[in-house]
Image (cartoon, rainbow, N blue to C red):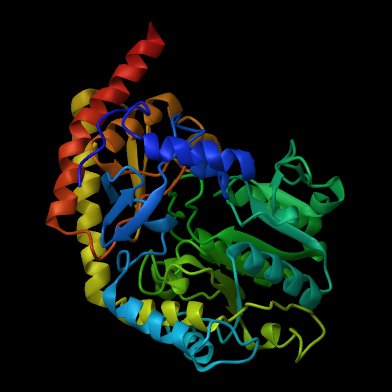
Length: 447
């Protein structure tokens, strides 16, 4: 295999041809917007295969993967033991529309690792957050939902909202196609702002069904919550009879063995009422879940009146992959992820410092991201200051050197248990040139 040779598309005719074909039949040529490279420019790489820490694109270029399918590939791609269990599951049948043992065992594994007492499976993180909002409303008999600007909870209508003008004003739709009625009961607050939370609950507390937050935001770049912030949210919700929902679709079983909750809730002594999970718990397959207190979860049909269903929920192949992944996600694996992450973070800081590029590297557990602006970054407004043009130059320089980063300045970087010395060295070798490219972009913009 070879490394890509050019930042333009000259060295990537295979991906270029596939992208042209894709745009004729798929909107934008992709099935999820960030994959289109619109934020960084150029042609998205079509991936033919993956093994361990490496991707192979349509032109045969080998790339060190720091996206890891946006988090799920904790053990690396095509882990042989996971593949063996998945292949055996496929051999038994791909879908039954009935309860299965892998579904049960994955539920037991999730309950053992987290504070949830009951869990229900779905097929995507969006389904999970949609379901917890419905469940919270059904349990409390209230309608208002509180969320934070910059926190992403899937493309649920009620949560695709932007903030109003005040601390506790109701939201307006954040994207065409979402009617105002869908967000009229959503309050959007600045992340980390305790005064805004207090004001919202003081004015609307009796109407608030739940507050939902990313346990640690990762969709505007990684922003670890201030110590005690999630505990404050939990207590505020409890005092007003609302449910506290932590979205761990990204952080669950990724930030630590117990997700973000293992880094704060388990230490500070609080538990959320409901949680959402995805990504790692599916082992690379479309699987997600939500869970929480037994009394709240018992409101779900068939035990209770809140309806939720899915033909492929708890799919035997997907739950087998998730179970195989979690059973191998040992303390040693998390120690390796942490060590690799620390090495890459330190080298990134050194390279950007040497090139004179303002930046801050932020992390929670084994997740991290790089903001090309002065830090710290504490909320969406801060994150918006990152230099996107400089990141685009940085991204393409890394890609040319054989490293696949998130094609957006507002995403987390991920490593896996398969990132060995060879893979890490490719990243370290690429960073100085990429930092100089970012500096050049900034100098060019200043002229």
